[in-house]
Image (cartoon, rainbow, N blue to C red; front, side):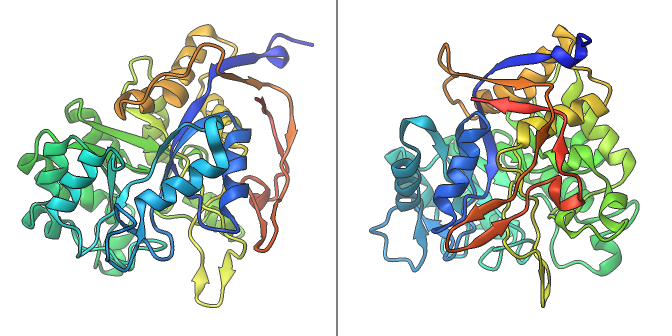
Length: 374
């Protein structure tokens, strides 16, 4: 057995800073999937039904509340996953006072911008200019909350939405995001599930109040992987991009000085991917994300038997994100191990909902080169 086959990393438990935990009956099994891969926390997306577009349950608005959803997660996870953030879904009913009161309560720590109709559950969203004009973005900046942005432009023609040198994400980070930070230079801003070289360059050039999450699928795959054989389990939003974009993302996360890019899986479970009205957007990586990230690092040339590369991987997976969100570090002894031992990928059966297919099983690959033990 060679040294590479023996490679084991002992890492502090990490925080998945972008995941979809859905609702009952999915909520408990998805939380368990997060915990099983060493997560001590999650930033849980608010595009539930109804969306989590009010902070307090007592608020009369016809939405779900951040307060109630946090309570449901904590009741299931207990002290096994203590660091949970639920962003407020920004809608036409969001006001600066809602932001200010939510921040004072300690319940609200982040807000979520969706481009209108731009992804799953984005039907209640408004254009970013709405929140710049009505004082909501200014309130987010002044209270020190984080704006989590699905960074894609909306209401686009087909060629503008996805073309070789022009797409919804490129347009957002070329035009709208720079104007946003010009108007609110101290805004804490996360470019979520970043996919393009343009977005990567934007984050690198911005100040320390700007960071980005990157998913396993955008580090591992390109649009060719999706289209070759129509592997619809790779269909997610934002779409997979081109080799040059993937190379930029890989360079960003494997750089020794990376302090801005961190793990956010955008794990999004669907029991039915191919539907009558199209393909449901989202890749499910619950239970397997550290292994997929490790595979991506090594495919990028960052071999993890090297102690230097192990430190780079640790920064990306375990350190950069919690530091940006001002979360406490994992306690001494709060660790998990990643071992170069093949692990078979299995379906996640959810009683009352059906089965969810994880990557890479959805691409007809049933084994990962790494295993996780908690």
